[in-house]
Amino acid sequence: MISNATAIICLGKLNKIDLLKRAYSVVLIPSAVKKEVLLEGKGGYSSINNAIESGWIKVSDPKRSLELGLGSGENQAISLAKERRDSIILDDALAIRAAKALNIPVVRTTTVVFIALQKGIINKTQALNILNQLIENGYYISTKDYAVLISRLK
Image (cartoon, rainbow, N blue to C red; front, side, top):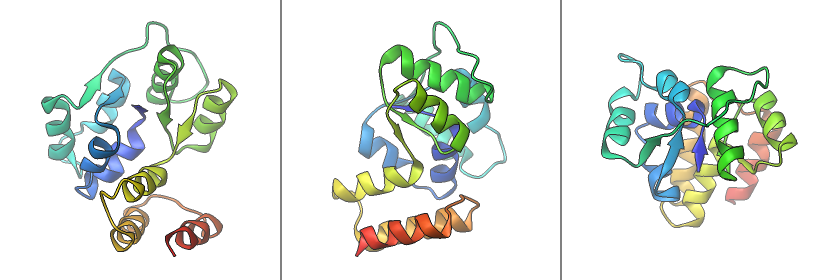
């Protein structure tokens, strides 16, 4: 699994970055994403740094970075996913559109929560709490999408 910065930052802030490890075992990020997620003093820094140092978040750059008109982290992450024929965790609408145009399977941070739920890593109450904490910490979910997510927890 390849990841852009959002899932790592958001789950890191909540001290829930282990959900990525337990759901996927290994997560690859390009160096541009590492630069975005490892900002000393930012929430989740130590848990993100520990994940990279322990080796389950691995830094790997694409051989060639596509220019998709996105940020460097998104460009590199999408390029890496295309090269490796792997799925990607993305949350930005334009980045999702670009990845889908390249036939790259996309999951969102909220999908990671539901995968953890499916695998029995967390229960429904914990999943709801994580979704609400994501929102409280600035993760955007439209009212309509939130309603759909909540209905899936019933």
